Length: 356
Ligand code: CP3
Image 1 (cartoon, rainbow, N blue to C red):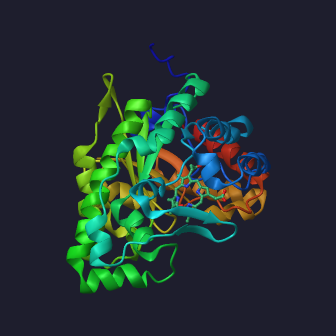
Image 2 (spheres, rainbow, N blue to C red):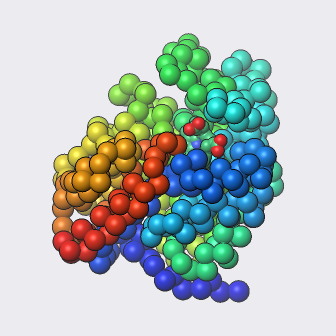
């Protein structure tokens, strides 16, 4: 069966730095707890994993933000921690506490046991991709995603979120050999995982290096970027003759953009501490840029939302030539008023159309 032609490919065109009529946007974590309908579906599913592991539920929540807002891309509903879960670490999302692993990876014996999981264990994700592509019916492109080897490694060693990364940094500074083995396995698993999402129908993929920015300069390159590079080297960049753009997002990675761009990705995601205009000069338009509104702007007044959205668009520069995908600088906060998202979408589309 051939896929229906895309009705809106502005997002893909911007990623490939082709001319666009307006600045496309989507939001990290656009499907999530700030939407009442998400909470209702999650309650029916019983748990976060119940939601993520059922392709019909995953499809339902993927489409929810698109029903409310004119977003230019859909993102697969899943999580970056499905990969370590498939490795047997026992993922659980405790109410109000975030993710937790029953079997974190901390000792040499833990590392010796670690393996690239058989991709069949992640079949529910690939099934979700196919079900969502079908339901989208060409409306907007579907983004697949994974965590970076370093970022999933943080959760695997810490066993949960962390504010100081003490356990993984203890390993880094005392047994770097163990950490390198974990990261090499993660890189292989992540490449296979993303390639299977591409085979199932993901039209762009994004690597979330959410915690790359906690590393010192020099160590970021060795423990995060080198493994993201391994993933990129193993990725399928085309499917059925169509280019699959890759976005690499390193939170706190603004000072390393030249090196991130040099991995061969198509686009670099940036948080709000970077200036899109100055980053663009530094990478000399060799990659597209995605970002980078402070998600907390959505708690401000309507005027503030409109002003800050324009600031991001103006900072990037003239719209028509492409190369900018508007997004938040990190995931949308769960307490965000949905009306604020409506204002943001309106401003990005209408302002960028006028400044075409
Ligand atoms: O963007 C989307 O709409 C797609 C879905 C998506 C989720 N997680 C769903 C989710 C994506 C792309 C992610 C990525 C993810 N997950 C990252 C990288 C991006 C980032 O935010 O830095 C990370 C670090 C995770 C790990 C993770 N998953 C954490 C720390 C949590 C708890 C978060 C919290 O705010 O409490 C999750 C759970 C999670 N993943 C939720 C959603 C919608 C909320 C959980 C719930 O419904 O109970």
